[in-house]
Amino acid sequence: MNKLVLLFATVATLVATQVEARPRPRYVRDKMNGRSHTHRPNYSRYHGAGSPFRGILAVLR
Image 1 (tube, rainbow, N blue to C red):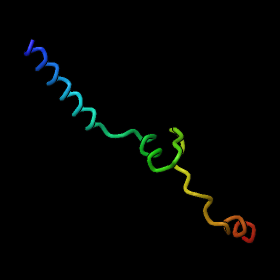
Image 2: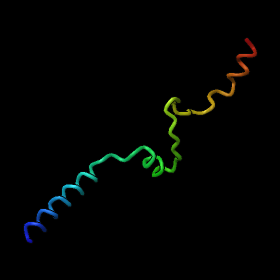
Image 3: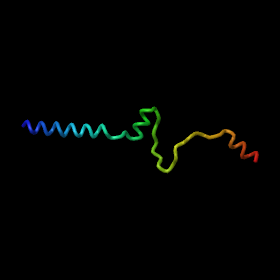
């Protein structure tokens, strides 16, 4: 009986250390930082609208 308890405790300890070592998924990291995460595999991340003068400069050329 003691061997069974010792085996169970050893396995539980090994499993617990492996779970802690796993990296957090991206959606969890984004949620922790207050951002929403949308999985968009074919798109790059949105970096903003860019220069507000881009459209004006294209018209003036």
